[in-house]
Image (cartoon, rainbow, N blue to C red):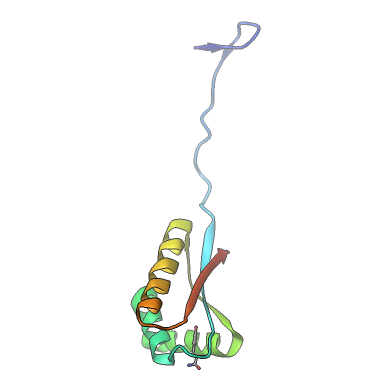
Length: 102
Ligand code: TYC
């Protein structure tokens, strides 16, 4: 057992990990070149959206400049951002995906 300077026994309390992890919004940014169909394909393929929801979100990004694809833990959000950006570059589209703390 550990003792302090006076020789008293010190009980070290481990802090229980009860707190929810910080969440991150994955965002799509508008540009003038990426085809609307390609953005809808991204949203259905990587963010589990229906065709209808994906079309709504795509149009929201198109008109407002930015839109939320989903909210995830940091690791999952980072992975989604990388997968989307890699996929867009492979298809020679400038589509930008990023993230911010919710
Ligand atoms: N603005 C694009 C166009 O007119 C469509 C678009 C929507 C691009 C959403 C990117 O994240 C985006 N073809």
